[in-house]
Length: 89
Image 1 (cartoon, rainbow, N blue to C red):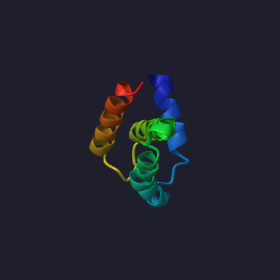
Image 2: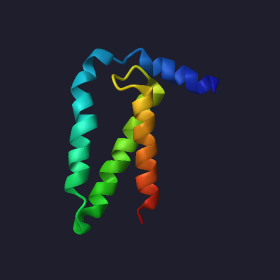
Image 3: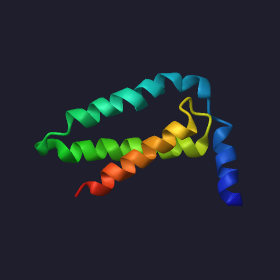
């Protein structure tokens, strides 16, 4: 745990939360549009890939902190994506 905290502190010194605003719409809207557009039977793998990417980002944003989406909202996104992905084949 100490080593993990040192790594997070090292990375956080280079983070610029003021620049995240542009990424919030992409994270909350564009990724969902990409998921929805790939839900057809022939594109299901694409939807799964977009969901996995969104899950990975939600976890990273929550763990690093200071992202302009609350930890509670990120937790709900993570839970929802885990539930959806666990039901896919």
